[in-house]
Amino acid sequence: QKEVEQNSGPLSVPEGAIASLNCTYSDRVSQSFFWYRQYSGKSPELIMSIYSNGDKEDGRFTAQLNKASQYVSLLIRDSQPSDSATYLCAVNSDNYGQNFVFGPGTRLSVLP
Amino acid sequence: DADVTQTPRNRITKTGKRIMLECSQTKGHDRMYWYRQDPGLGLRLIYYSFDVKDINKGEISDGYSVSRQAQAKFSLSLESAIPNQTALYFCATSDPRLSDRGFLGYTFGSGTRLTVV
Image 1: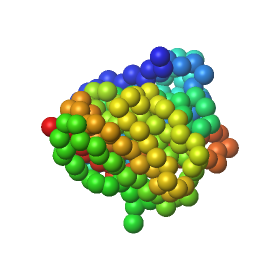
Image 2 (image 1 turned 120 degrees about the vertical axis):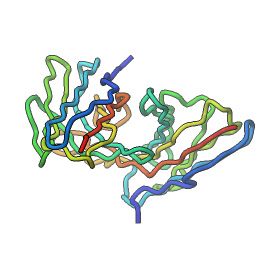
Image 3 (image 1 turned 60 degrees about the horizontal axis):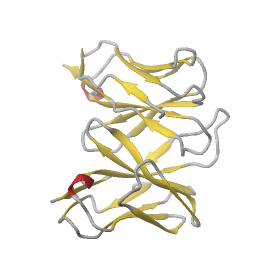
């Protein structure tokens, strides 16, 4: 059973702080890793993808991947109240999307 | 207009009724998926289709069926709805082309909130 685990939260951070979201996965052959943001009652929106070990930065977002530890994280710098949402970690082990496994999500609350 | 459109947005139905959720997309993607989302359980794959003649069961297909009417249309049916099928349902598509690194991820529709009473 392939699993993706996340702390459900809520994770509360003050406005302007760095929010750190973590995810671990069980399938060692996982190839691609994604972070989706989901506002309450809305659909998931892809914000980051990462494929190799290390850091990938996009604006205020940085994804970090450590395949040896089976760990992926998302850092949000200068957090804003508009970042308050649930963040879903997703892990894929093929090129077809049929082995896509989502974590349960971490709810982030950015306090003004 | 949205790239992936789901109808209806909300639906309340009675136990035992047949209901169809529809999904259409303008992204030109061959690959389409149906997921359900339950609080604390995350997103779980119901069915997926890689082209019009291809239908595959996902993790939780029991109680559901699908129809791929065209490249752009993928419908999910509940033949006899039951209360534990109350959930948020999402249709998704994926680009069959790969980036230089691999799978590009999903684009989700806006979702259908289904309540079975």
